Image 1 (cartoon, rainbow, N blue to C red):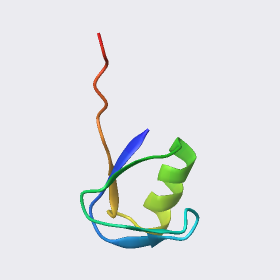
Image 2: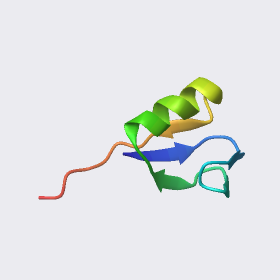
Image 3: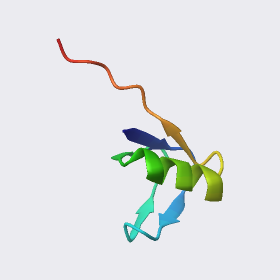
Image 4: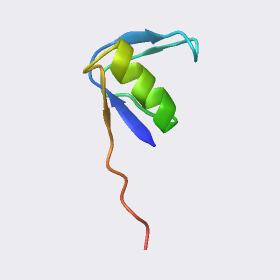
Length: 51
């Protein structure tokens, strides 16, 4: 799944700084973890299906 950053934060698990509007790939479990610890900092990106 892809996430879009809404507020700058230091991603300690990936050892990077996530900037606003950055899009990155992650797991559903990681998304849930980020939402719990940093609510509102990331949002899901709707992925379009290739045809």
